[in-house]
Amino acid sequence: MNRVYNFSAGPSCLPEPVLKEAAAEMLDYNGTGQSVMEMSHRSKAYEPIIEKTEALVRKLMNVPENYKVLFLQGGASTQFAMIPMNLKKLGKAAYVDTGVWADKAIKEAKKYLTVDVLASSKDKGYSYIPAVKKIEGEYDYAYITLNNTIVGTKWHELPECGTRADGKRIPLVADASSCILSEPVDISKFGIFYAGAQKNLAPAGVTLVIIREDLIPDEPIPGTPTMLSYKIHADNGSMYNTPPCYTIYVMGKVLAWIEANGGAEGMKKRNQEKAALFYDYLDTSSFYRSPVEKGSRSLMNIPFVTRETDPDKAGALNKKFVAEAAAAGLVNLAGHRLVGGMRASIYNAMPIEGVKALIAFMNTFAKENA
Ligand SMILES: *Cc1c(COP(=O)(O)O)cnc(C)c1O
Image (cartoon, rainbow, N blue to C red; front, side, top):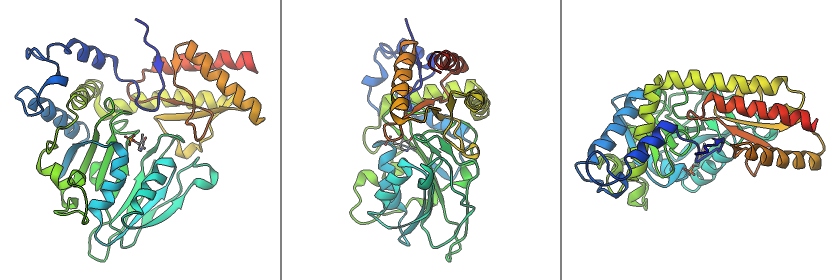
């Protein structure tokens, strides 16, 4: 068997022990004579699977009692609409534009309410997180993209949310699709904390939504489809309809792997070590560089470019790099189609050996192409 080091931004690599366990249980899960793919979501065998997955989310992320944990479908992108449809009361929300995913969330939200874009880093190709210290105003919520998968930035310090005229603090909503459980976070600082699973938690197919109960309205805005109501899913334990059963099962295994490897703290240590190694290499290289400002850098997605300034030559060099890396068993290193260059996504499941192998390859490539 030849496994590669997979630097894909998503869907992305999963911990090998998880894949092996899932494979071993494929034909006969726990003596049931069936795979988890084949069983009813309302069966005796399945119930403990979703319960255990939720319990692990709560434990590993220290989710307070007054939050619901929901397993939804439609990807992170469906949350772009679901959030304004469910949280709209005053009719206005604050967003910070930190890249493609934030921009998509903004465009979607504008269909339902007034959006104030408080700051943007578009002026410099989204290579930094704009300074937003305090958010004040009559906002239903304030929205940030915690880690920007495509450009490789992350919020290192959360904006402070002020208090509205009704005496309530503006709830902070975060898209954590590409950084969930990469390090500890204080969930109590957020109204909604959500993530598509396919980067750091599971295969594609489920979106984890952690939402403070008082933010779940009895009725979303008129015309909201039943499936886009948080209350429907909360009241039915994420089983209003068939949930993505198998993905939730694999998520449970990934969470158990995280727990066995030191929980969120353990992941932070592991991720910091990997990222430090890689950024140090980029920052001291005469051939490569990081396009991202030091104070805004992601632990998970690390874009890089060569120092070649001629666009045609740079483009050809990037192509050569990606192809030769793939031939060496280091795959999915092309940058996002919108930004070019290269990008290494080094989520929880990427072992440090993968980062070391990448750096060794980069060294050789630099010598051969300098
Ligand atoms: C991948 C990603 C999305 C989109 O997720 P889908 O599940 O494909 O809708 C949204 N936000 C961020 C930060 C992402 O990384």
